[in-house]
Image (tube, rainbow, N blue to C red; front, side, top):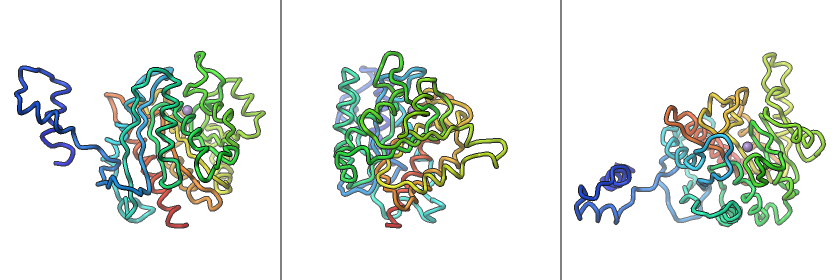
Length: 341
Ligand SMILES: [Mn+2]
């Protein structure tokens, strides 16, 4: 009974129905001695010993969310939902992990006292995994976690301190280019602006449909930013869509690329529990095409990814399941690029 042995049942019971008088000494010993077995991405059996090909890194970070709370629980919900994802992949034409070693890390410890401490601590956590020896996939958590991840990338062998070499492919409903949101500089709503401050060379934004005039000015004036608005990509008259131009730009990318996938880039009905679901976004297959074209771009090297703003709702598990499917497609994309090299 994987993941559901006696200790799991007792532990769950202990958490939710704690009644000291109902627990005898033997039960207490079991509770103290054994924690429930760790959930792994896709429910795969994992070998803790490296080297690993792909690492899944849960970041239950939530400090500046503006509309609805719950991204703190997103990473775990995504891993739980991944147990429902089929292991067979149609592009690979076989079952995951098809010989590749995937490892689900312990989550980042979110017991911190301040925003500054959280950012520093995420950077430290990230540093261990962004050394080019494995493909890191961070599960968030609010989008603000991207800043410390980018800071840690300075040490990545493909970057060598020069973040101007890096392209971020950002899938998002929001431009995230404000200088401040609700008076906060280090917010999920400002994270791409902070990435520019750090010196990132190129930002490609896809699916954007919510932005303010301050952000529009940056989109129009900063030549490092290329924005593909949802309204131009997804048109009733498909001949007028600039989708193929976007795909061409992705195909022609070169150098190190980071994929930052805010799940609210998907159409709101696919991710109803995310902090700010927005109508009019990418379809699942649209997102899938972007991911596959990115990993097939012959001059680009995708050095890692984050899937962020995952959240849960008691009414539907679609949000975390959509996030688990996107994460799986990123795993597949990476495997395909490894097979090619
Ligand atoms: Mn965002």
